[in-house]
Image (cartoon, rainbow, N blue to C red; front, side, top):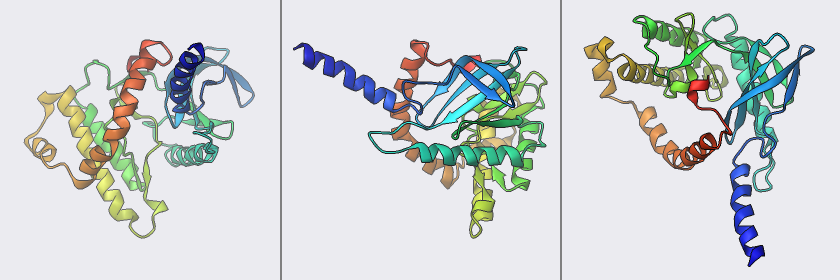
Length: 262
């Protein structure tokens, strides 16, 4: 009886931790970047593909460290995915390094992780009032990315869109961005569709946070969600059905911080 009960307890926990990029290990307590040691302050996210946390140096300067998947998943090697995601995202940060709305890349952390500057401010998941010109500036950021062949693709997550203490928009987390240069045949056409999706979700954020600034043309755009947005919704439903209860449990136990800790 005791053995069965123990199995029933251990197996669900093992399955739960297998859904995390670093398993039970979590983020390292210390990382070294350019010879300077940084101490883990707080884990802010730990999902299937990556773990992200705040780190502080000796002068209490905060940076962000993201380490992609390293652990096996039911025996299957997954570290190669972590390496791929890391290189891909670092490449995006380098391409956008001159944009003040994108945090500066600081360097690699192990073979599947990297660090970037911390953006002082709040995510749009918080209730802070957004300035009148914020969404016009955010539209301009989308255009700057598009000029370089990049679509953000993750604009529907308000946690990734920051209202900086400088009053300007900032984008973090380029894990699922689209780079048209990686698709020489249909790249430009796909880019147009994904940029359209970015603009759509920007209007959705505007509708939620500053409905008083909505124009009639923007309301009409919301009524005509394009094919890619509808497809994304359908594909993401099974994943969200699993992820949401897990994230609620992690937040309730204090293992990760909520969006207001950004």
